[in-house]
Amino acid sequence: MKLFIPIGVALTSLCLLDEIKVLNGLLIGNDQSLLLKRRQLSSWYSMNENKNNNKRSALRSVHPSNNNENEEEECDDMIINRRNLVFNAVVTTTAAVLMSSTTTTAANAFEKAYPVELGFVNDDTSWDLQAIRKDVILKKKANYKKSMDYVTKTNLLSFRGPKDLCTCILWGGALWLLSGSRSNPVVTPVANLFYDENKEDWLKDRNDGLFASLPIPLYVVLFGVFVLLGILTDRLILFFAEGSANEALQLAIVALINGCFFELGRIANDEKGPTRDQFDRTSQLREEFNEFAEKRIQRGGNCHRRDVVRAFRRYFGQYRNDNEEYPLTDLEIEKLLREWNSVNTFAEMTPAGFYNGLSVDKQADAFA
Image 1: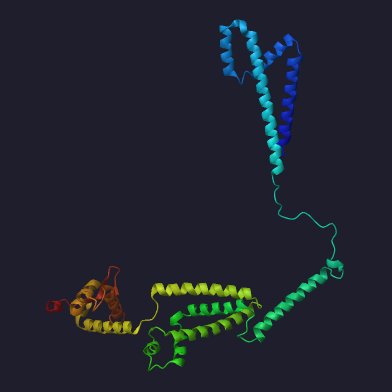
Image 2: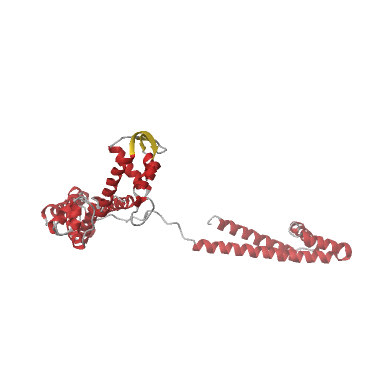
């Protein structure tokens, strides 16, 4: 933009000088010079006025006696056009100057202004570079000692601020999720401290290795237990992090996020332990399949797994049709077959589903 300003000013000046010269020649010159000037101007401006010149030439051919009058009209038109040209140049130059005056300069990444004289604050000349470095080191040592005193010498339930308390709670939640949430190994021992197995069926199921829902008061107790574990974990992390509360908080957040991912995976894969009802139903199905296998499955030969499923449903009449009272899918029967085969016959199953080494007694189907 700064480069275009002098160029525009120079062009405007040239146009003004040329206009003054032409006007002087038109006003002061004699008739012959006036006619010559007019013709020169006409030839110079003919490139931009081709259409008008063609019209004027046609008029001259019709009225040859009016050539001088036509030339005077052409000269007047060219004077007006040149004045318009000068006016446009002046307007363009003025606009460029205004734009350059309002354009902001580019921002600098660094401050280029420096103080005239470098001095000390309040004219305290005792602070040189070595003293400043020593003061910074002493402050860091004091902060480190203060942080380590909090970690090693203060009570576990004393906190420096809300950040420490929030960090301990986050560590407790992370430990709860990472250890298995409701199925973690801490739940059953804590429950045995506050409840009696003979009076609580859910606790009996827990002691038998089964899954059972927990009462709300026990969740409150577990919350306090895991917050206490979170406090211990926080103190341990602070000890290795030199008392940095920010690093302990960041690690607690990362651990909690990982625990949430594990919990979502457990929910998606249904990895919680079986309940009492599920365990009893599975035990009943295993007993029924063992009875069926003892009477209907023979060693040797081969059969498809679908043959075993159909034979099992024919053997037990309550499973022949799908019903809500005795729900049983084909996949569950195939799972029972795989479990029984892995313990008894060890027959090999092909990818197509055929078992080599066992078969179904089809003669018994005639009496089913």
